[in-house]
Image 1 (tube, rainbow, N blue to C red):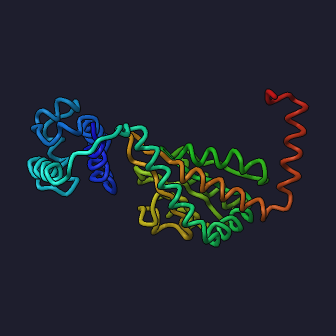
Image 2: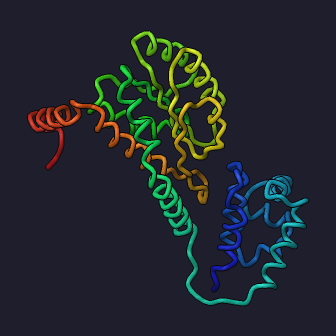
Length: 278
């Protein structure tokens, strides 16, 4: 069975920010790629477990007038392309390949290390260093803060929203913070944009790792470092933002004279306490 119908569908979906329901439809279409050009909107809705209007909205989100126009487009592609043979890539393999492509793009961006070095110098000089990440970005912020605390004397993780978020930013400013690092990933919470606005008004320089230079947080960031997310699965994959965060940490160590001694002290303490299984 040819993998070209599934590949064509993946290419059709790329670049579109789809809702969870729309992604469910997309995944169903990929799984039934050979059948999709011949399915009605009702049939596709039943297969995907969604409503028929959701299928219509999905087609419109892709830029078509409706589902019939989408189906016509797929039939035309099917007729125009010769049959091919070979083992198909499954959905998981396609997601991995997409992430590999994102990492290649990140590697190209890092050919100029200047922006990362500038960001790292700013972050290293902030005492304390608040690190913000809400919802989908909370894991990225937590991972960065965990490792940064091993080399930076005062890292403050901000991974919960609500009315206290502004208070915690103000507290960091009063304690001497000069920079806030934000991880911002889709779907972008409104309160992240509001928090960054508040941070700038409080005098903080905002450094942001985001999925795109055109993300909603771009206008409230003083230095934005883009790293694309994968959208091939039901939930985004964020290998590139994670790796970019680690690159920031590496560059930060160059601006923290005590980084190596702190790491050695931690290793000695960990050995004494038997923290890790060797």
